[in-house]
Amino acid sequence: MFRLRARTFCLRTGMFPLKALAAAAVLIFVADQASAHGGYYQGPKTPDGIPLPTHTPGTGVPLDGGPITPPTSGPAVTGRKRDEPPAITPSTTSLPPAVTDPPLLGSAWEHWWAIHREALLRRTDDRSPLDITPSRRAPEGGDDAPVQELRERAVPVLLGALTESSPDVRASAALAVARASAAGAVTGLLKMAAKDESADVQHVAIIALGVLGDDAAVPYLMTVARDLEEAPRRRSLSALALGMIGTPDSVDALLLVVDPSSPKAHREPTAFLGAALVGLGVSGRPEAVEPVRVAAQNLKLRSQVRALALDALGRLGDRESRDLMVQLLMKSQEPVVRQSAALGLGGLATIEDVREVNILLHVARNDRDQGAQSLATLALGEIRGKAVREQLVKLFAHASDNDKPYRALAIGLQEDGAGAPTIRAAFEADGHEESLRGAYSLALGLLRDGDAEGLLVEELGRRERFWSPSYAAFGLALMGATGSGDAIAARLAKATDARQQSSLAAALSLLGDPRGEQHLRAMLARKDSIFESATGAMALGLVRAERSGGALLDVVAQPGERPDVVRAAAISALGRLLDERDEPALVKVLTYQNHHVPLDALRVVRTLLENR
Image (cartoon, rainbow, N blue to C red):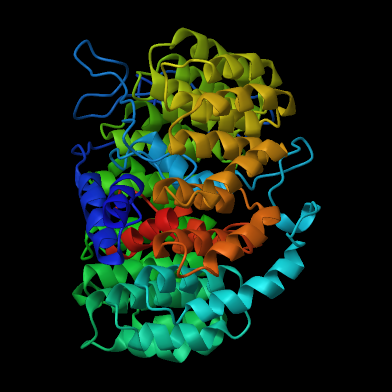
């Protein structure tokens, strides 16, 4: 019976043994490679061939200088076609938003949310009561301790778990001690990376060394990365980890191992060079800029590698690369390059950069590739200002169903309440599309639109819906709608599926309602359901419920009583709970990377983010 339940849990949760996880990740990301052919662009001009204005606007100055010429080849994606299928609604056989994303193509907005969710939930400012930083929350009674005391209790347990017999437990422990910045962890992680009997655990340990950020790991990682006899994945992950450490020594070591600016760089394996470029981008080091910029312009390199170089330039803040990105957005016939140029340009441009904003608008409106459109739209969302917000609202007004989620979320990223009425109206009009309403809920949450609270509460009560009530609950949490606690709790009381329960309880916890954390702890305590207890553990980690740290520790300390897969989930939750970075490490690797690029090292990181 235990084996049957464990197999059922693995099939439903994605928490497979590590080799199966790697295989599953490959299946997910193979779908990412499918994309439309690109077009050739002459740049944004009026129909008469006049370039768009290049004056610098102040707040509220319109950015569109008249109609924009569509691509000179291929059809423009301008609206929903008669035979266009509606936006895809996630299957109810997948996991909840609180744990992982629905099994859709990598271009689906739900995948974007899954990658960015943890970082977005940590976005706090004076306008929002939401705060999931453990050190800022007061403990509440019982056997649970303040975060510092919990750290003192948990770290020795996590370090001890590095040597357990279960590969799942060891892998989760490796990442957890790194997230917790545990003193002395580098020794155990180095041993695991070199000698663990499971190759997959070795891979997790290598990434964990990057998360830990200790220069003591640099010599080992450098040795692995430069050894041509090493397994390709170990070399790639070691290069990525060197960049993740982000110190002058680690970046110097990485540039000694592989020089992207070398005339012979194209001879390097694609996966290895791509991982090195991602690492250089994540490092944030100024000495990484020049070699990455040269790589972005090297036409001997594969388009995927040049795309990753463009992403890295955006992460590095290299504003001198704006001209390069503009040129590629206008002229490149490779969709993946345009996608990354859009992302990179969005990371570099400000509201004052009118030319760059206009070109992003052009791509968001007209690019033949749906991925480039979507990423350009999200890039615009991060360029905050009234002028951009007004253009995003115009884009949304003419969107097809498949465009609407990204355009709504981009308006949400503006965090300007003036865009809320548009999303509210769409929420009421698009009642037939569950996926759309999920995206709208999150956008309204990001906008902190208190006037939408009633709409989201109403969505909570729609018993025929599975996913959209969960997203509505997260939207209410993002907007800090503490008055919605009873409505969320009422839906939670009626929910019978552990995936939906965990989402609703997580939202309650984010609102500071004790009923949410209590429910998740009750799920964790269930000994007759591996699926439910592990799902509860992962959700406690997502919301960083430090008051439940003692309960999570109790689970970890019961190797004979609780299944290893549940203990691994509890260890993962403790790691997230003790991670006090403003931007979680694994999220940092994926946030500005083009999620349409099927790079092996990014597949591994994505799998770890979802399951560890």
